[in-house]
Length: 272
Ligand code: ADP
Image 1 (cartoon, rainbow, N blue to C red):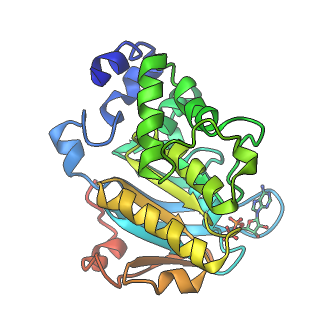
Image 2 (image 1 turned 90 degrees about the vertical axis):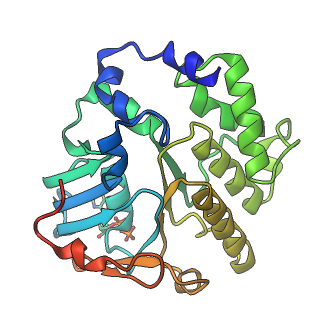
């Protein structure tokens, strides 16, 4: 049912160009499903003012991984994530997300890239005067989904983040931890293949930070790949996880748990 509703919106050329990437794990060609979900290949980025931020970043993330991106403040964690959701563009290099070069997508295809990405920010970015439901629904409304499907997806997303029954509450009266849960619900509502989190616990006290980390872990356990940017060392120590350290414009892989094949990250012959 949901699939046929979605199919009605697969009409524009930009969306057709992106079609193999739609919906987590559902419509991928067999070869696409076996490829890494994300590859950064010699990515360079400078802002007009200041020294280069990324100076040849290489990384490879497999479908289903949970990966921390860490490094000192100003190291380029946000920049790396912004390049991925095309809020910024690379100066050089390639970013292959599900086999497509994000850096070279046409403007027309960018919305369909974002359909496959959920993004969560440090400051939640909710409309505080809106209800919880409206804040989550907006992400699906911009995709043009029918109202019935939106209601179902929002209800499901709120349940997953522990906010079932809170849809009519005004977002602004919720606690910080609850607001971030709403933002997570908004990010997962479209069932993206990849969730990006940019310091999502930066505005929360330590216990809430661990709770929110746990929420991302649950989302990851359900199959969604998670890229979690943080400079909070205590979170990195909660349990062994693969960590990518950004420093001095380069990414260094610290396999501390789920990924033991880290050698290939620095293999120049990436499996494209
Ligand atoms: P992090 O997320 O690791 O703290 P950022 O990616 O936010 O790092 O920033 C990396 C560097 O790029 C910093 O020196 C920052 O000042 C600079 N920077 C970030 N965004 C911009 C921008 N829009 N214009 C100019 N410089 C920027």
